[in-house]
Image (tube, rainbow, N blue to C red):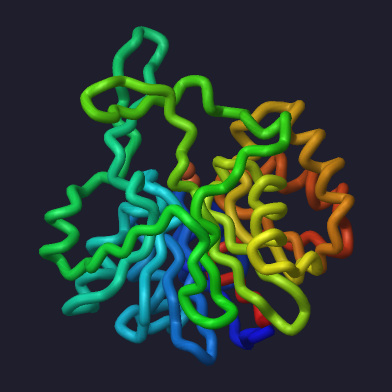
Length: 281
Ligand SMILES: [Fe+2]
Ligand SMILES: [Fe+2]
């Protein structure tokens, strides 16, 4: 089994802390450095990625590929900013990152909730899209999960009000494009979540199934637990106890109050995420 060594640095997140010049926004992005090259996982909303890359000394030119976890604007909005540094670069993601999607407000108005740029515009800016639905090994030891089987009965939170337009028809939307990056390290797998709309536990189980490794070095990223209701939170906490996890670093859409709760529940393995946070692996 090939394992990778390297580090990841959070370049966009909701929280800033400590003495640095980093900026926060509701979005997420991680710069992943490995001996097989550097990869960018998500791009944040677009207001902070370039600034934070300079502050934390991460070269956006030195990327081998860009990976998009799902089409929401807080993960894709910075794509044009990053593409400025490239003539042409592979951008990996699920085809549904371009799904026309919306949520309805209380008066029934549609609020567009998809990627804020058209595919042709991004291609012109240098993106070479590579789509996947199934798991793919981008480099030996570096995986993208593909679509995540929804297996737990309790991870359906925050799904009721989402719609997509497929072949002209409005259909319920479950964010099939949601996928994570999984890095095989010498200490187990490191799972990098976007928003985990498919469920943090579903995602962990899928990552274990893809790699055949059940030792979890770390979980980093958005869990969406801030928006998923109390039942999902309680059951996720219970379920998390069954895994061997060394570092639990929930970020972004986990929210501050849920992060504080997880800190109390998982003392010893929990770390607060923030812009500039580094995880060595
Ligand atoms: Fe998000
Ligand atoms: Fe999202």
